[in-house]
Length: 103
Image (cartoon, rainbow, N blue to C red; front, side, top):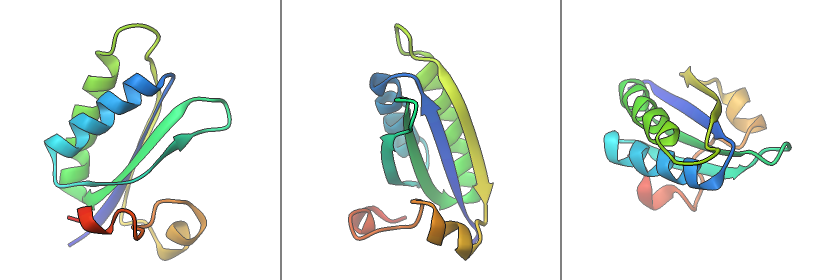
């Protein structure tokens, strides 16, 4: 089964929280990382089957945009079938912390 990674970046933590909540409820995906980017924005990355990541990302984008205040989605991207090199360099691999939630 092809696995994808999806990332959403927003201006605020409440928006990324809303996006993450919507994503895990909308598809069989696992949150693999949530952190701040260098500009102080927030991002969350999910992993799962390609079709599920696409569905979850759509729900996450809607939820983040619906947050009140300055909760703009600054960027988002889906990488279907990321190569092993990408997983080794970026923090998108499944970890021991995310293991209980793997799909």
